Structures are given as structure tokens and as C-alpha cells.
Image 1 (cartoon, rainbow, N blue to C red):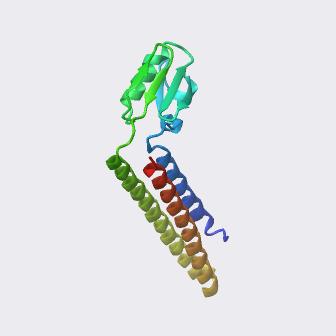
Image 2: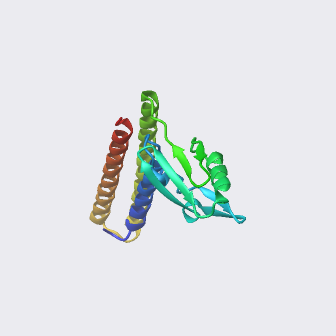
Image 3: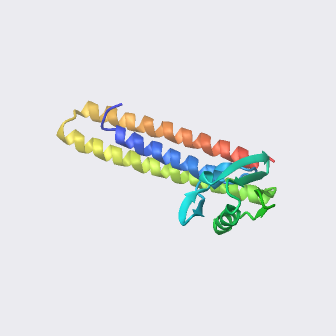
Length: 183
């Protein structure tokens, strides 16, 4: 790959990783501890990642169990969960907090699948915009130091790179949709 295309490949890779993160936060009716990755808890006045103050496990398919290392953290963790946009209500027994994931309805599954497709489309649009920027950079370099053949080859390489990333996104959309629609 030509060094001119490297920064654009990096941008496409970041778009793909961003989509993966967004998909990790979509609830598919199963307990996924990664839903709590962005959650911050007030720990002695400092916002701290939940993973740093508690043990998080998935004992059953629809339950996340959070076991704080300090018993007094239960209230703070519950507060953070309720303040988040997870839409889950924590329940505790004084030692551990349990998050129950309700069974998804068919309508909710379809809604989530639509959201997955939309996020995938947004990622593909971002990648096409990156390709356009790459082509602009290639044309600019073509006026200065590249031959016509080199410009054509680079534009072709940019298209192949874009096609590869878009195929990856399509596969991610398909996999996540399948996961959501599986009862």
C-alpha cells in the first residue's frame, strides 16, 4: 500500500472499530458485560470505571452480577446504573447487584435490527467520504509528483481498500442482525 493511502486506511479502520463499539452496546436480550464498559462510578469523589471497583460476571444468559469490592459501593453503583441510558433497574441483596435483562419482544428485535442497519449505513457513508478525501489527495499529488498511471493505480487501490472495509461492515451488520433476531 502506498504511503499516501495509509492515513485513510487508518481512518477507515477507526470507523470500523467505532461501529464495533456501538454494536457491543446494543442489547440483544442477552447479558453482555461490555454494556457496562462506559459506566463511571463515584469512588471517593473520583469518577472511576465500574470494572475498577467491582467484579462483573454473567452467571446466567440474562443476568449480569456486579460484586463490589467494598460493600458501601453498592449505592454508588446503583446510582450510576440508574443515571445511565441502559434502561435497566438494578436489584441488590446487600452483597451483590443483579441486572436482569428482559426477553426482547419481536417488535423490539425488529427495531434493534433497523438500528443496526442504520449504524452500518452510517459507517459505510463515513468510509466513502474517506475514500473521496483519499481520491482528492491522490489528484493533488498527481498534479505535483505522480504520473497518470500512478494516479490511476492509487485510485484503484483506494477503491479496493474501501470495498474491503465496506464488506467487513456488511458482515458485521449481518452477524449482529442474526444475533438480535435469534430468540
